[in-house]
Length: 184
Image 1: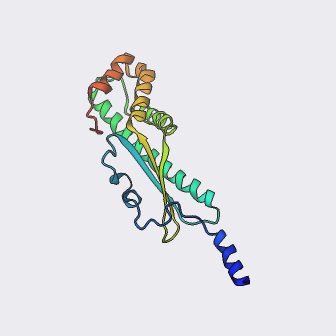
Image 2 (image 1 turned 30 degrees about the horizontal axis):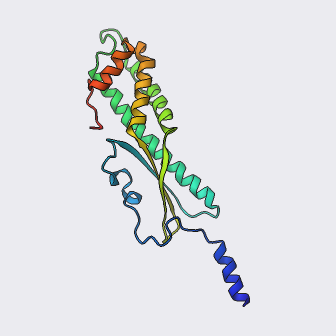
Image 3 (image 1 turned 180 degrees about the vertical axis):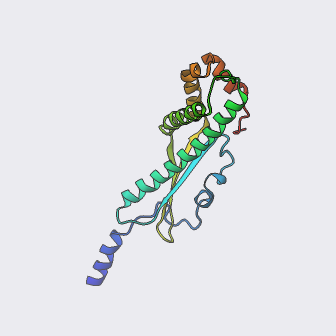
């Protein structure tokens, strides 16, 4: 009886599995964004994981934080590519004496940071999965493209003077596809 009581007490301290009984891991655990057909088109995805630790809440917060960091890196990379192409394609400033390469890099860095910060405020954990094999917790963040696009539009309105563009002209250039939209 003492042995049975001792085993029951140990069982209470075991972490509960988020998907108890799940035999297969979700595709996003190994493929992340590649598991979703709308990745890079309609949404951005970030994935993170955390091995077993004694504190289940710490494991959850750490996995979520890593997913958020992955999401931020993907948004940043998208925005940097987009705005580099924007500068190459758009009639931004007067190329003869207007914008320097350093100023362009600073602009892209600033606007990317602002858009990413604003967009991440809308990101949510879409799913978590705990491996029944080793207890690793996986976290998936998802952010709709519309949140990123809204941030891009807001920043282009705010920063249009730096580009010698009227605010509506700057946004119109984004909307009309003066630059190739890589999410299409």
